[in-house]
Length: 344
Image 1 (cartoon, rainbow, N blue to C red):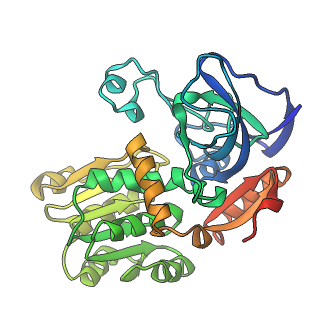
Image 2: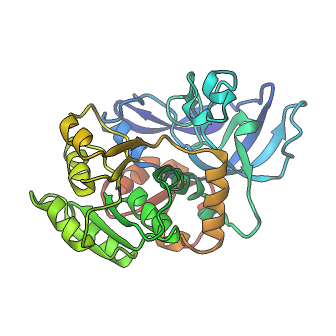
């Protein structure tokens, strides 16, 4: 028997289930660590547009390959791996073009699929694995998936060298976006957040200035602190209020990249978009090249796991881990079947 975390309408549970067996093209993996994502919290709270409880969470996962099906030759038992959790069909127009993150029949491991990484064991398509370099420990490797999100978003934004950048939201993804944008040469970065604690944290993590997102004049204040309009705004919250702020900050001729998962539809001031020649760019997950770049950034120290991973709990304390992540006092919370291997 194995343990598996399930996000149910009544909360977070740890259940005993049968051990999975790898099917054709699949591998069996023993989990080392799995991160609690903001999307998991939103799903638990009923605010995720695409994930509805009950579901098996855990898409930010690192583990060790225990067994492979006979036809798998790309990875061997004993390999340390991380999972690229989108599950494409590999045959639709988008997949054939190398845009499997936009697959027309996309599934997502740990977000509505039958299995997730918050478990002792799980199986997954071998094509969804990335082997880990020896100099990335499990704690750092757990950041590859979330870091790949801003890597992809900044790639879509275009060159950031000598650009003025605003980032709306100073949670984990916002702070990772800060580090990636800085590494890509942004000349000045201003962040917004509703919480004073989050604004203080953004300054410690390297933002040039911060603004209270709740102020009516927030867009004007961001532009003043940038000393110009923003060339690029990354909306890591993606609500009605933040999208309107983003468009005002980017006006005129700027780009707004929607990084956060919107909890619902928003209205768009289309006249402003047209007249100011604004670009609204969606950013959907990542591609293999984003995973590779995320590994490089971690190995180069652009992102330090010691700064971002603020709590590690054993699998049986999954409910408390979700509470930690939802409480606002932590950045990245990890679950680990064997927590004694880590020290914060």
